[in-house]
Image (cartoon, rainbow, N blue to C red; front, side, top):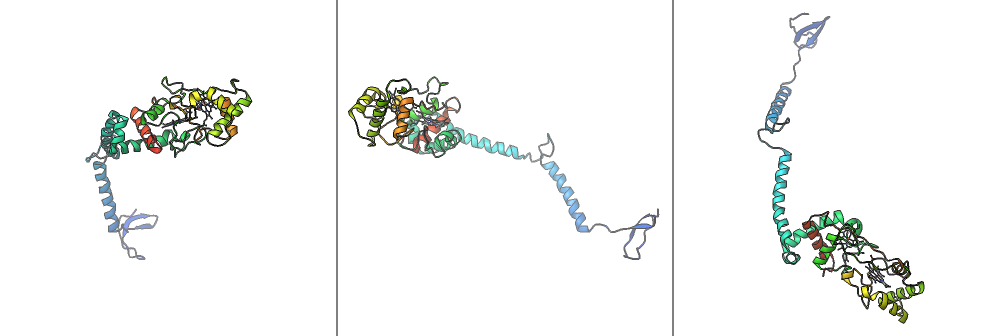
Length: 283
Ligand code: HEC
Ligand code: HEC
């Protein structure tokens, strides 16, 4: 292998002096600009290696990591929220109603938590559906004050796992043969008559007074302590047509709402109560 360099006669370029079986290598070095950028990149990566956390255990000269940055931001946020959460936890429902900022904070938390936990049953707009009460209106089964709503949310309705759950069972007038078919028909007509949907009859009124008024009130105005819905408005939990009424009276319904007190913390339940209260005609 020759080591002498020479000028290649065809291209006019110097050779490197390497030769294999008569094949010679031209010496055409990389352009200067390329070399400069290459070494700049090498230098840059070296600096980067030192300044940033490049391998486990090395936090970098600047000690900057995106995770630490996030932790810092979260801590600041938590500290900020903690003030409000403490305030909210200490405040009575009445205090919250009066303090505009606290109310706004509670509302924001309540809205988020509602979407996560309540929307599947009550609908994302809280308008409910058959069996799931509309929370936007002014008709409350279990009462619509902030405290009432807080109790409902914390302990649920007919939720067996909570000792303080709201319980009230409408008798199954048909299934348990407390009333016969004709009587159920008559009393259903009486319920309809409360909202002008049928003519009132004496027989229907009598059955109602004897069997229903104890829970639903003499004129069907409802009773929040017993969770007995108002029957004299056109707002129906299960439906206000004759067939549905007959079915409700025959079988009763016993809707179940889970208790949230064990699953969500106390402050979240408060936030939810404030949010739900604000949605409709809170009392
Ligand atoms: C599994 C379905 C379900 C979920 C989830 C649910 N609810 Fe309910 N909720 C019900 C049912 C059913 C009732 C009606 C109970 C009855 O018949 O009295 C009810 C009733 C209520 C009432 C009482 C309404 C009134 O008129 O008195 C409030 C308030 C309420 N829910 C709020 C909430 C909130 C807040 C959440 C979320 C934390 C939630 N619910 C999640 C099913 C549910
Ligand atoms: C022990 C109390 C109690 C008695 C007595 C009672 N109810 Fe009820 N009623 C309730 C409760 C609680 C509900 C809520 C629905 C449920 O069971 O989840 C209800 C629901 C209803 C509903 C459904 C309302 C809606 O919005 O869809 C109708 C209709 C009704 N009752 C009619 C009657 C009639 C008619 C009688 C008498 C024959 C009667 N109830 C007797 C407690 C009672």
